[in-house]
Length: 429
Image (cartoon, rainbow, N blue to C red):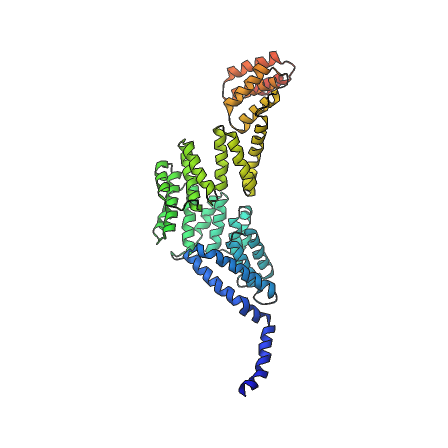
């Protein structure tokens, strides 16, 4: 009887709640988003990267669902923010920036607005294309986290003096604050770049004094290796790097292998450097494409032009644009080299010498081909050009006497070429 009396009262409340977009958005989605964000923040504090990725995927789905099905609810701004956050943490920086900009455009006074500015700055700092926008993204926000991303962006852009100034403005960081560890590691990198080894070592020692996880201690050892390498203590740095136990093909393993390769090159151990660079190539490290470009250049120095062409072609076809552009010119040159390799006309041989000298750094091989064109082919077009090239390279190496011999040959053998007056006027010999 009592239940029957309640139905007329409860029914309007129930149906009214269902019609209210805030009610549906909260209980169907937003409550779950809140719980998920708390779990994500906890895992981020713990550094549990393995369990984080599926959580970011879930956050993306839930936020997108709320935006689509409850566009009129009061939780829409939060959903836009958390969708941007999910994109950001997954490395989808353009999508993340779009969402944070959308949030700040339509909800500039929302309680999450300051955090949105910091997250937008983070996205810009991590994406090399947008690092010059970090300051604009932050506006007047100057929290410790904002200053950190300003310092990070300046460091990555090569302006380490500005990075050091921003780091010096960070205040009251506590050892249990996750940002404190990032601050110390960035400080090591910034002061290493400034060659202020005392300051870099100070930051490193402060980091090592913390209660570090095994993965963090390995990173600290890597930084110690960086410090030793920058100080020119290559043997000690090599011992540190090679003592770090890292999973094969991991991002960290690739990064350390790249540093070992640089030391091998300084020592003149090209074979050892190539071995390390091949490890980087197989890894998920951000240095992968740099390693492949360097492998290509080393193969050129070894005379393996086909191997170099294959490597540059792989970079051109698969790498992001900033590496693709660096590979493109050399790829074109090596493709041209392959076409010219077995052709015997004077132009083909002359052009091969140009490629060897100007693009591949093979002075002796180029000189040999230009000498062959000048001495043996006697072509009225390319023989004088070859003599001109021989004058040029001998002047650069300081052998004026030999350059004068080629100058006289140019005058006597090819008086109509028009090159002799140019040589006399421009080179002053």
